[in-house]
Length: 369
Image (tube, rainbow, N blue to C red; front, side, top):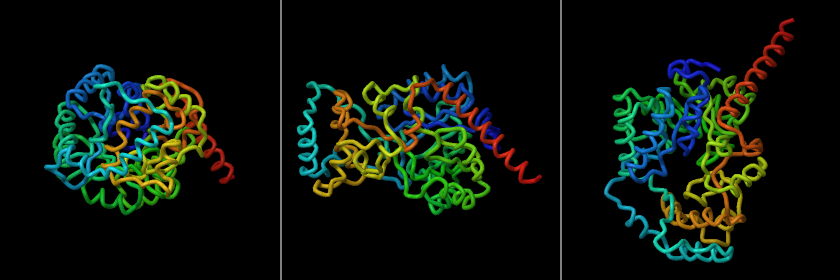
């Protein structure tokens, strides 16, 4: 499964995997793909450095990358406390009422509320980059489009390729103009923040829009046959995220959540603003239903929504409140029916790819006869 891009990066398979779990990213890299560690949850630089140290020890010198969540426009001088103060009391009351309705216990006194979505903040993201560029990362990806120009230049000075996600051909052209090296065409089916155009339509549009820049197909891809389809549409690889959530190396900290993912069908997700304030595909739950209900207060814009619900999400996850328990995940969740190792997933993907290519070759051969 080699393409020009995979050869450039020195990887065996043109499979790029985004994941918040270092063990998953390292396992994918060892399996011949390209692991990309998500940085948004690292608010303390030393925590990111610790996990990148671990990645160095467990990738055997093979390439890997980092994914950040960074706005294209600089926003400096705004503290987290100042942003928190912008959250209306009515929205805080709605969170309290929703949690009380489902009997969600409080956290213990002094217990941290867990992951807070602050990686979007200018200084937090730049602190992550200060750490990252001390390591031999080969790719810097940004989930919010093109990073600021000085970040692109800094990456290139370190010999690091820059990738950006796009949900439309217009977005992709903007990335190309900004000096991005790789465009990830992320379709409507994808987990997390995503646009409104399906992958089958989006991928060739983006390929045409930014040629000759390499494009990775993303969204609704979880089999080798789907990888073959993405490459047939002109992509030079695939960007997979959801499929790794039920691998044995993933650390969801919740057997109940893993069970929900394994049981979910492709129709059990919803594109909702409930988690971050931007449309993000996730499991449909009582939590997303509450926020999407027209009778509710409506979600706040990013980053206010993420800060508002951070403690609530931590409580829901800690106490495994089943009706509210969810996670960002794509429609491919319908294929995630068993726990497997990352290596087993890669093996299955490559076998499916080979079968698809053989099938097309046979069809093409019969057409010529």
